[in-house]
Length: 410
Image (tube, rainbow, N blue to C red):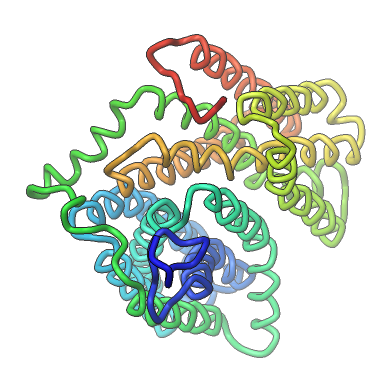
C-alpha cells in the first residue's frame, strides 16, 4: 500500500481522503431511510392537499420501494462494467433531481413520478456504496465500517420521522424533500472528489447482457446464496414487526402513541448494540461460526417466547422483540463482509444481490404480517419461529456440505 494511503484504505483517495470517504458512504446509507420515512408525518394531509385518495398517496411509498429494489439489482453490475464513480455519481445526480422534483410537485401524479426517480438514484447509490466497502477498505477494517452503517440503518428510521415532524411545525411537507435534495447535492459533490476504485483491467467486458450476467455468475455460487438466504431470513419477521408494530402496541395492548414511540425506540437501541456485541466477541477470538450458532439460537428462543407468552404482556412482547432485534443486527457486520469476500470479481453484482435479497425478504415480511392471524402478536411469533428454524436447517446444511465450504466462517 502506498505510503500516502491511510491504514484503513487499500488505496489513497486524494482530496476525499479516508474521512471524506467514510462520510460519503455514511451519508448515502442515511439517505435511504430518510427518503422513505422523513415525509411520513405529512402523509395523512396529502390526500386532501392533492384532492385524491389514501391508496393513491400510498403509491409514493410503494413505488419508491419497488423501484429502489430494482435499481439496487441493476446498478451494481453496471458499476462492474463501467466503474464505480460514473454509476455512483450518476445515481446521486438522479437522486438529487428526484428529490427536488418531489419538493416542487404540483400534482399527486408528479409526486409519484418524482418519487420513482428519487428511488432509482437511491437504490443505485446504496448498491455501489456497499461495493466500495470491499474495494476501498482493508479487510480487517471492513466490519467496523459495516457495523457503523448498521447502526445508522437503525437510527435513520427512528430519527427521520421525528425530523420530518419537526419540519412540519414550521414549514409545509415540501421542506422534507428540499432537505433530502440538499443531502443529495452534498453527496454528489463528494462523489465527484472520489477516485475510481475499480481498475479498468478488472471490469467486466461486453454489452448489457454480459454486464447483467454478473448477477448470474454470483448467483451460481451456492455457498454465497445459501449463506445470504440464512442471514436475510431474519429480515422477514423484523419487517413484519415494522409493518404492524404500531397496531400491536396501540390497538392490542392499549399503549398510547407516545408509549409506542418509547417501546419502538427501546427496540432500536438494542439493535444498535448488536454490531457492538460482534466486534467485542471477535476481538476476544470468537469465530463467526460459533457466533452464528448463538445468534440463531437466540432468535429461535425469542420466537418461542413470543408464541408462548407474547400476548400476556406488552413487556414480554417488547422483550422478545428486543432480544430478536439485538441478535439479528449482530449478524450483519461480519456476514456482509463474508459475503463480499466470496467474490474475487463482480463485487458490484454481489452487492446488488445482497441488498436485493434483503429488500425482497423485507417486502415478504410486510406482506405476511397482514395475513389473517388470530392476532398480530401470534403472526410475528410464527414468522420468528419459522424463519429462525428454516435458517437453522440451512445453516447446518451449509456447514455439512463439502461443496459449499466458506473458510471465513472458521
